[in-house]
Length: 342
Image 1: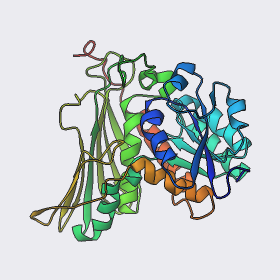
Image 2: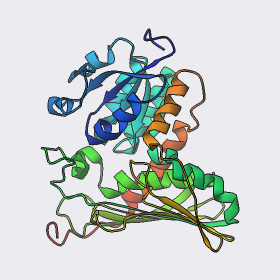
Image 3: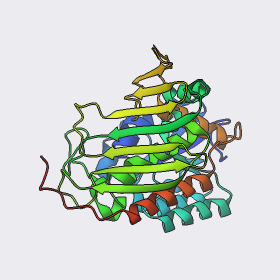
């Protein structure tokens, strides 16, 4: 750790879009043992929309030279992950990078290798690992008997002109050059990771169908992915940018021979939703209303401080990234959208 406050991990945030602004930064600022020391974004307007008096700027080198900087949360567009992660590792910082690791496999491999060679801790920001309902579901798994399937629906509404707050917004998630894809590369990583975390074994085979059904942009606005673990658990993911937010659109099911667990509205950035255990009668399962971002940052802060191990190896995250991008590359070309937002 650098020469910040004793016992405190100094954090910087690179990429100050709505996820960082509305979810990551509030969680970081409330994390015991963490202190936000610097903010960076190439877009000065994005920095202006962040509250507080934390030092900020558009120059990456100046950001990485900030006094007391120990760890960097990277939330820039996918295609820019590699450059920021490698620069942060070279500056002696631990890195928590948003999913997916990168827009392609080569960049993901390079940034994992760079952090390993530099001896810097690297984690992937899969916040759904830390959602309290999913932590509780994992504890309930023995009650389900032999698990046969995991089913995930993780959908939202994302037109090309989407904005989180009515102000001008750069919706880079529908730009193939910066995102590397559309709904599938953005949302499916959460389900793939979460299935492995819940089951204790990862998906090993994966196929995908892509869809351009509603929106007129040049990336997929929906996808179905089907996979299987080594022991034979089937994993089904439906992800989409074409499901209106007013509709039921977020559901996680784990099916077993003695029971079934269903989490509704837990896939997302907040701590809400419900968890029900069916054996066979439904029983509501309580869980604490803690932010998945708060739990994630607490765990990574503890790992940077040397107080605990980070439980998720970068090589494992890289393996899932390769699996997903191979499935997306092998998917049949999707037909063009029917014509604009409907």
